[in-house]
Every structure is written in structure tokens, then in C-alpha cells.
Length: 425
Image 1 (tube, rainbow, N blue to C red):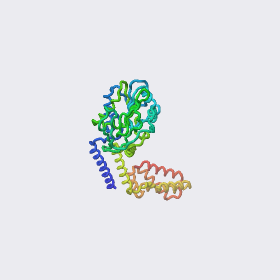
Image 2: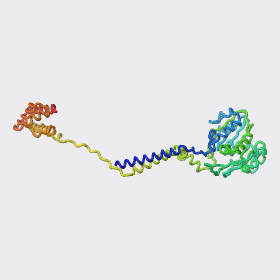
Image 3: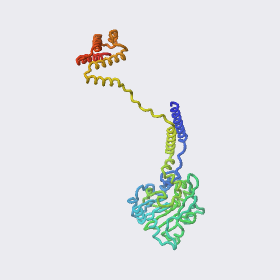
């Protein structure tokens, strides 16, 4: 049993030492790179927008830039104030009241710039229903192009470059397929002043447009990936951003909407990376994405396996609890004594008391017989006076030789015995 316990202790100690050493060696490793499309304004991850934040603060007045982290209702001024509304993200989620607030903001003479792969239904239908479509065409959401790389350019000759700005989607540092979105050229057959294409995607779709709505304008950009850190750390990416920002100017407030941002699949569009997003959004995927939670998960599994291994071994049978032995001799004697007392057999009751007294003396004082030779020894060992012990012997001889004993004699004899029990040591 001791050897088995020692084995268990050694195994657990080795496991804990191994885990601690692993954590120690991993402590100096760099944090894993977050490759999710978060578009977080303060994030330095590849698909964060910290570089974009700095560029916007230098393009607009820094004190005019406001981050919206709540519903648009009551935050957007519906009066003309030369204000600009900005959105960068995969998709927008806005209820009907927020969408109407944004449309009222634009119609009042302000500007909205929406860089997203989708637009809410109310906004899309409101913008594209204000013009007559070209014959045989209709608005049916953005079109998709699946590839790992896309080329972006501008329509205006002063902004257009000879070679497209190349953008590659990377997942964990490696090129991966991506769903790029754009508008078909058939929607721009007339090129009315109220609906202008400003930029192209792969020379086949328009990814940057301007749409008049009321007294204001809406700029739609279907490639928000172009405004993330991954591409803005390169000179070509910064140059593309500068040419986009030429279209935006404001003397009033600038609102950057962070409240409406959601993943693309939340807007009902196809999810371009189902495997990656399932892993990132599931509970186990989140646990494994964080180093501390990952090691806590592995440690929990290891301890559970060890528990099952040692629990599965044969265990010692449970030892039953044994009740202590009961001394029934005294109980038997008491019962016999009560029987003699009820029958008025005083002599037999006295004889039983003598037997109990002799047994007590034999066991406690190691004196085999209660006689004249033992009186002195018993007096010394028990501390009871010799005269009292002599009276006990006299009563004993009388009881042994007589055939009858009165109740008074029994009571006197009982008092002598009780005196001996109470005063003996």
C-alpha cells in the first residue's frame, strides 16, 4: 500500500513539473497573431484599423472625430452640418430606426462613407431605387468574386494608376481564398451625376461608388479589407487610402460608427471561411485560441486521465465496522438477582452478591480466596479497614451455614458490600 501511494505521488509530481517547465519555456514566446477581421480601431492585429485611425485623425480635425458606440438614434444630426459618417467593417447590423436615422442624416446634406461587404436592406433599397435601372438590370446585393488576390483601381484619370493596387488576403500569414464583393458595371450604363462609379475591382466590377440621396451623398466601398493594418503598412496601401480620402472632406463633425459592426455572416451573407470562423466562435475554439486557457484545458484533461487510471485499479475492500463486545455477565447476574428478590429468596441473592464480590477482588487485587489469611492483604491493597472486611467474612460464614436469611440481614449485608465498593481504591 505504501509503495502504491508513493508511485502515485511521484507520477503527479512529475506531471506538475512537466507542466511548469512547459509554461516556463513558453513564457518568452510572442503572443499569437490574431488573424480575425475585427476592424478594431485600437488593434494592431493584421485586420485591425489602428493605422487607419491615425490616418483619419490626420486627414480630419482630430477633435472632430467621434467614435459611436451606441445606437445611431439621437447621435446623428439630421440638420445640414457638413458632417461625415464613417463605417469600416465586414457588415452592418442596424434596425429600421437606426437605418432611417442614417438616411435622414444623409438627406439633410451630409456625407456617409460605408466600407462594407454588405449593406442593410432598407439602405440598399432606398439608395438604388432612386434611379431608373439600365434596361435588363436590377439591384440584387453585391456580386462575389472568389480569389486570394484582387486588383483595385480608380475610374477618374487623375486618380487612376497604370497597374492596379494589388491586395492579397492572408490567413495566418499565408494567401487564402476570399470572397471579394462589387457592383456590376451594367448598373452604371448612363453614368448619371447622381450615381457615379469611382473605383474598380479586377477591372470587371465597381467597388467604389458615389450615390446621391436627398441633399447628401453616400460613398459605398465594397472592399473594407483595403483599410486594415495588413495593407496600410505598405506604401501602395497608404497611397490607395490617400486617393480614397480625397473624396471626403468635412468642416463639421466626423462620426465613426463602431456600434453597428458585425461579422459578415450575421447580415445573412455567405461566410467565406466557415471552418476558421466555426473554430473561432465555438467555446472550445475560444479556449484553444488563448494560451492560458489552452494550458488550463490540457492540465484539466491530464488530471482527469490520471484520476481515471488510478481509480480503475483494484481497491481494497471496505473494512466493516465491528461493534465492541458487550459484557453480558453483569446483566445476567442482575437479572438473576431480580428474580431471587421477587421470589423472596434472600439467601440466594446474598450468595450471588458474594460471588460478584469475590470475582471483583480476584480480578482487581489478585487475591484468589476471601478468607482470614487474606484479610490483611486485602485491607492493604484496597484501603478498606480490616474490621470492615472481618464483618464481611462473618456475614459470609453465616450465610453459608444458614438455610434462611431475613430481608433486614440482606439489607445490612448489601450496605457492607456497597461500603467496600465505594471506599476501595
